[in-house]
Amino acid sequence: MKSPEVSFGVVADCQAADVDDFSGVILGTTDLHFQNCYRMSAQKLQQAADTFTAYNNERGLDYIVHLGDFYDRDMNDAHALNRILGGVGVRVAHLIGNHEFMDKRATLKKVLQLLDMPHNYYSLQKGKSRLVMLDTNELGPLEHPEGSPEWIAGYELIERMRHKGATNAYMWNGGMSDEQLEWFDNELTDAEKHDQVAIPMSHHQLFPHNALTALNSNEIMDVINRHDNVRVFMNGHNHGGAYGLTREGVIYITLPGMLSGETNAYGLVDVYEDRFELKGFGTRVLDTVVEFPKV
Image (cartoon, rainbow, N blue to C red; front, side, top):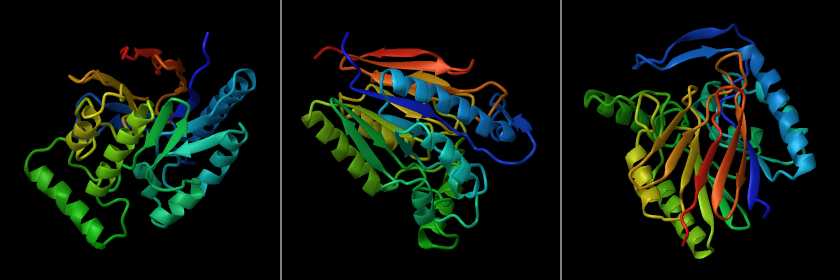
């Protein structure tokens, strides 16, 4: 049996904080319930790290991917979480979530340094696979200093969408700039030239559409649909998780948030030349296999 092209552990929305549990229904919905167990998150992350360590020792692990919202509201909480994942001994690849900016001290530069990220969007290549790590906070105000031109433009965009009745017109959502969309398109084209399967990831959901979907999800999916080497997209943000299939045959996997619920939620991904395999841990992450079409 052939070895995977790339293997990685994956976690979404750890959001550790020393605050009481909180539950409710997500604003703008009637069916998206949440139960946030903030003080359990560090313990859950340690359990995931133990699983990743065992897998790394047995078969080898290339990365740990966290899909955004590493801490909930205090940047200082990231230090203990960094130590937990750092103990596995493989590279930790972060995406930026909306909660990275809930600490009023947070700036993009500080967040990138705290999470040891090379850029707010970047890619990781190994063999015939390329992980494309996107920043879906560029549109919207959260990533930008309050009162800056970018902040004002993001705030006004959400207000325009709200007046038009958009169900996802909320401050916790964001999107990708034209510059990043062009970079994304070029990155997928380059992956095609190198005969690589591309697996894009973001914090915000693209599909199916609801109150947690990225502000310009259609434009992002338009880029994806121009490339035959994308079969799987992964994201966080929607703590309940979601699985959908577009008309173009790309499966969109929203990994359930580690924060929400008393049971854990994380996964191990093996990407082969002919398929994508997600093994779920905890009761909320579904095992998923995606077969790649034969060329």
